[in-house]
Length: 106
Image (cartoon, rainbow, N blue to C red; front, side, top):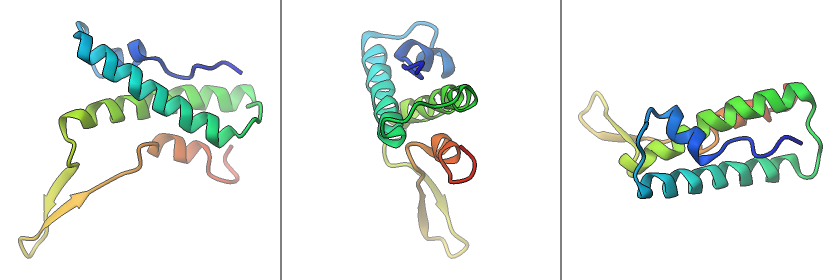
């Protein structure tokens, strides 16, 4: 198993933060740990194939970057419906990984 699938420095690079502050580095590390925990839970002790590992690395970086960016939008993305009602658009913290772990794909 080629864990870790994503690291804090990979996350800050993915979001284009070339000079992260100490707070940015700490937040990226927390995001990486959260994504790693999701992968560990979903693998449930299984050893992934080389193909699955490649997909996990990409999905982990995408989800890690998305999770990192939620710090700037903690209430999520809002939209306004046709009747003027505010609508919160949410998503899974692991939306890229969700596709990797769908039955029949992994």
